[in-house]
Amino acid sequence: MVRTVSGIVLAVVVLGAIAWCQWSFGILLALLLVVGMWEFYALAEAQGSRPQRIIGLVTGLLLLALNFSFVSDDIEILGSGSRVFGFGLALLLLLLPTMIVCELYRGEERPAANIGTTLLGVIYVAMPLSLMCYIPILGSDTWDPAPMLFYVFIIWANDVFAYLVGMTVGRHRLFERLSPKKSWEGFFGGLVGAVIMGLVAAWLLDESYLTWGVLALVAAATGVLGDLAESMFKRSAGVKDSGSLIPGHGGVLDRFDAMLLSAPFVFVYMLYVM
Image 1: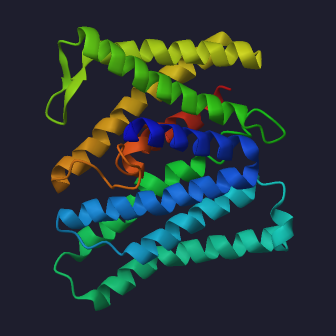
Image 2: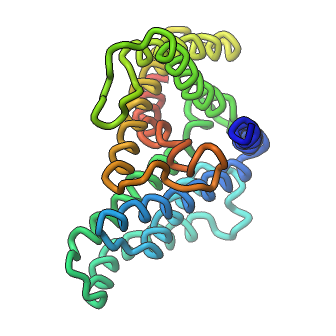
């Protein structure tokens, strides 16, 4: 019951934030970024690393803000848009070498690992969330939440169909070392569910069935790899969930792991195909 209720609340919040306006979508991405990076750094610390949490979070948020400002029609309310963007870009470039400077004074035994895990938090969590800023505007002159909503639906359809098929006829393990319950039958069942949702998106949006069908395949296949990647991090840290923010579901990484890895692939596909 707890898992069901919290899942419904999470779905309403996520879908509502995406559909409401561009700014609510940006705030949602920022919240997911902060919590997701904090969870990732906690996993890294459980493995013996000492990432620079604050600098990593500031770098991630700045990266998201720059990408959001680049696509926003309302960024002029902050002042001179080009000047703000230029200042933010300069600050982002300075933050990267600042990580090395800060490590000089921390006196840790594994400075390279600490800097590496700090940067990995930005790459693994902040970069894909920043790329999601572009999904609602690719192929359109104005911001349209529909592509982002259907991207979420495709990921969810993949999860649901993979679970149902895997529980029903799953026999052959997909990646037993990291996820003993996943099966090849569930994997292909998830792909079918994702493609069905992609075709529904094409029908409702009056767009190419082939284009959306392939997008669904790209999102679903890379989403499974995202799930396995997060399982790899958790297994190395010796924990079951990345966090406890969402009752019955774990943390942000547990719920959005598929999108974190699939977003760059979906972005490139939409950029050059759609």
